[in-house]
Length: 93
Image 1 (cartoon, rainbow, N blue to C red):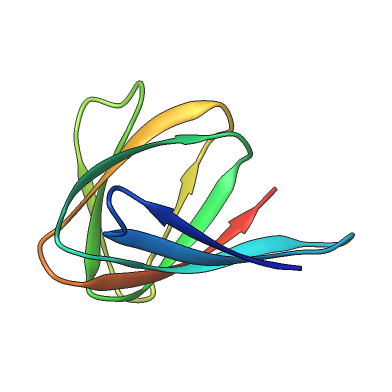
Image 2 (cartoon, rainbow, N blue to C red):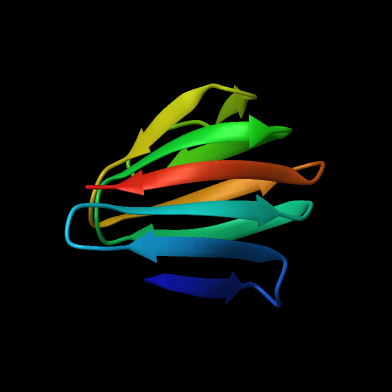
């Protein structure tokens, strides 16, 4: 089923699809810096713009551009930083 999720004063929004076989979301992020927590492993591909990512336990931010993919381990805090409206697709494992 589908579920619309809104975070950080509606500045980050995602539409999530879940069924017995898969779970993924497509999202849009307004410029800013945002903190999240991953429950499941997240495999994210940037689909427009660029997203800088800080993952708990890492020493620095890494920036990903259109069509680049990164992973967030399960049970990990992370931050996104964007300077322009950016979009993504995220698969959960």
